[in-house]
Image (cartoon, rainbow, N blue to C red; front, top):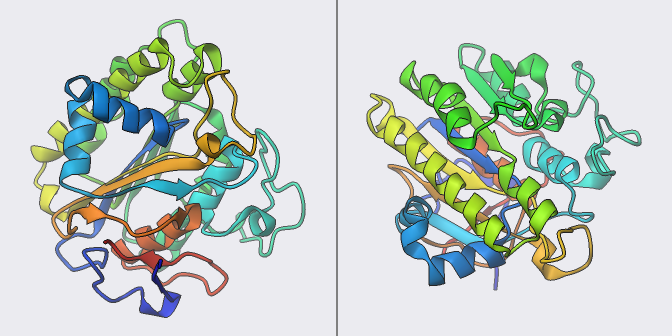
Length: 303
């Protein structure tokens, strides 16, 4: 049976999930459209082609059963991940929603429900945050007024290259000194899934590009003086199907991976199914933040 811990227990050190003074920074690698069934297939059949993702899972706390919200669109699910509440509370309810489609449970002074970045700004004003993303929709759900620095690199630029994107906009952030939270978002896998289908050869080629980028980020972090203070989080928003779509009731749309690794993280399989907003509670815990009473996230226990 899945064991849940109430919001009031977030300060406890539970199965490697709790925050200690030695780890108070987060590198959040956000991969749009990474389906658990595809990642599992790749890890089983071609692990040598995605060595960095395999290694991260091997030494991390992980699940392939983090449950996306219906409908499994990016705007809805990234809003849930960053805002810590389900769709009926934050109001981002449509494909590509740029704002709440109905009155949210609470609107912060910045015009949207508070996000993890809002909490960081309010509770740790000395803290730093950086967001880099190649889909402009992310800017609508992170509260850019609370983010220290944010950069959107259009995916459809003629000069766009996945590795160059990482080298130019991701690595320098880490080399300059890890912010308290660094969000690095990649849309290539989702775009490839829509064009060629989830589970297609092209999709797995994109997964290899993601793996290369993850390896580059981890290598830069390994050289950083902040490596022993930084937790690495890899998460996705939704899955997809071979016909190039998501948003149905098919379980392949709902199952998403979460891998967490760091100096204070005890490796193992997370027990039971996680919801997207559970991740937000865990992120807040690692960053030492008190979360709003309205947030729905819980910390889950590993097996």
